[in-house]
Each structure stands twice: as C-alpha cells, then as structure tokens.
Image 1 (tube, rainbow, N blue to C red):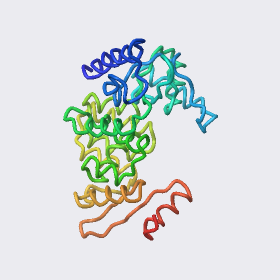
Image 2: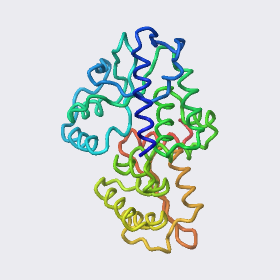
Image 3: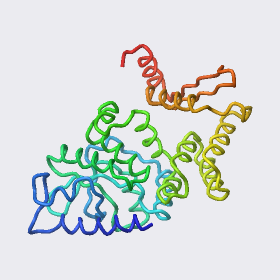
Image 4: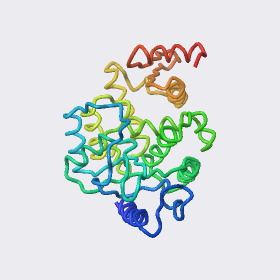
Length: 296
C-alpha cells in the first residue's frame, strides 16, 4: 500500500507543476517536461474532454456498472491516457470506459498518463528506462509494455530489441493485464506471484478465476498446485501424470507469443500429446494460417 500512496503524492505534485501559470508545460521541449513524461498524474475529471476520434459510440451498461463497482472498491487500477491541451484542459486518448465508470462512482479525480506535444521519443526513453527498475511489480511492467506497443507503435520484435527481453517474456507480462482487477491488485500487493497470475489468466470465466484466486490466498497454494487445478478445469480427465514439464510449458509460451493467441500443450510421459490453438474469429484463424505459411 505504501507504494500506491507514494504514487498519489507524486501525482498531486506533478498536477500542480502542470497547472503552474508561470511555467506552461505543453511540449517535450518545455522546462520540467521530463518530470511529466511517463509518470502518473491525478487529474480532475471535469478537465478531461472525450476523444472526438473514439470509434466506439455504444458502451455496454452492465460492463460499465461492473467496472464502476470495481473502481469504487479498488480505485482505478490502469490509468487513462490524456493529451495536454490549452491551460488546464486535457483530451482523452484512451480509457473511455474507465473514465465513464469513474464518473458513475462520483470520483473527482482519476490517475492519468499525460502526453505532450513532440514527446514520442522522450516517452519511449522514459518507459524503457522505467522497465529496467528493480522495484516494479508485474502489472506495472505489463502496463509499460502495453504503452510502448499502443502509444509508441512498436511491434513486439522492436520492443524485444529495445528492452532486451524475449518476445515470450513480454507476452507473459501483457497477458496479466487480462486478469480481473481484484487479482491484479492482489499481485501488486504481493498476495500472489506472477506465476500464479500466469496460471489464472488461462481461466476464461471471470467468476471461476476469482474463486481460484481466493483459494490461493486462503490456502497458500503453490504455483504448481494452481496449474494442476487450472488444467483439470480445462480438461476434467487430466491427471497429475500429465503435468507439463518445463520444456512443454516453454513450448506453449513461445507458441502463444508466435501466434499471438492462447495455446494449450499437453503430453504424457512418453512425449505424445495434443496441441490446441485458440482463435476467436475467422480473421484470427486466417492470421494463424498466415503465420504458419510465413506470410505475416
């Protein structure tokens, strides 16, 4: 919890810096811009306008209500991204569901990453440097990877070169962001490890995922025990003898990174097994076929 408090204090200080009328920070070249780029800042909701280029116009009310309940209990886990406009005004870049849900709850401020004019190179440097820190939790690392891909428009291969990590490692961190916010918070507070999170992310049903998380915390389950439970949920006929060896797990991880989708690999003691590749649409299947043919 101390880590979260430090960030909030930092956010308030940077917010005051941004709104100092004597020292406007509008671009990466302005004084003190380096203190803003890549950091989280608490911004008043009333100062953030919607993105006019947002392609989505309809938002599922039930999903928004669920998100608002989560935000009320845990706060905003993943900051929104905004662009600095004139004065104290900001325009939303990404995170409209989080912004709407925060308004539903009645929050007055929301944590945000602030983009400045001409800050592309500086932001990339700040994020890459941030990833090298030793005190980051897995969710913070995943968020940094996500921003480098979505905001800097790096491919996973380019990102791998920038940070000196394997593509499979980057994929593993980013997949953690698919976990329920409660589980993400538990990982940040060290109730569970990244290994637990990697096992839980393979459970598609949110309720089952949360139930397993509660079992881990209550019973102190090991990562291996959780992997066995998850495997049995996905394949009730599975037995402990088919527990994935390190080679099988590494193979599955590399295949997931290559195909950019969930992959399940099981094998018996003689090495014979089954490979399952998940796809959500015909477009995704075509993408997988193109990968196999070497056309993408």
